[in-house]
Image 1 (spheres, rainbow, N blue to C red):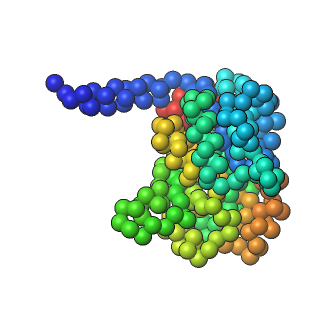
Image 2: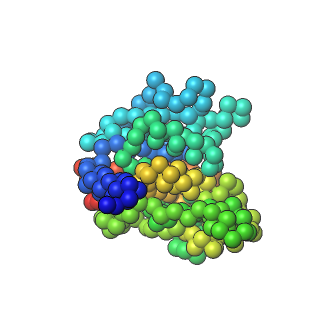
Image 3: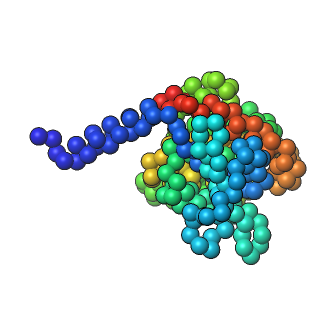
Length: 265
């Protein structure tokens, strides 16, 4: 007789395999900034949920609706109540992702947003990337094994058919809590072999992996990190135009997902 743990593992694997064959019905889009979110809200005709599934007092915002055969929930962490700016970074992203998974039970997470790109890796302003895997570049713990934990490398949900059909660029994503790039961060990003850099992806990946929800990462390039212009200046200059490219890229992904199972991706 097999140990009970083996039975549980086998049953869990069977459930996962079955889930991968079912058509995707509920998609959770996690996004960091209102400027990034609103074009998608308009595109998919989503409405702000009046009865929030989130704890009382948090600034998190949920939009929801139906698009073709999909139920879509788009969440963003809202505005900082004291300063009035978007709650960017890993902590708000991880919290809102966790709460959304618990409340909404999505079949698939799409972490969509803007990102910096490296021209040495072929990135250009307005390019839309699917991340193959994600890691941190600002959690440096120089102790054996803890160093790997700090990097937190995780693979995105495998989507070979989607990548081929939509002809999107694919690259590695590196996440940190600063818009600029210190020499220490740069060394870690190089070690991560990253093409794009953001402030949320690895946090979303951590929570998605923790709760066993497949996740993909769609990132549009607003600024060239190894270019000549200051990052903040270039980011603000291109943000509105690049969110249009992001909306187009996410729409293509959603259209492709509609009617398909995870194993079809």
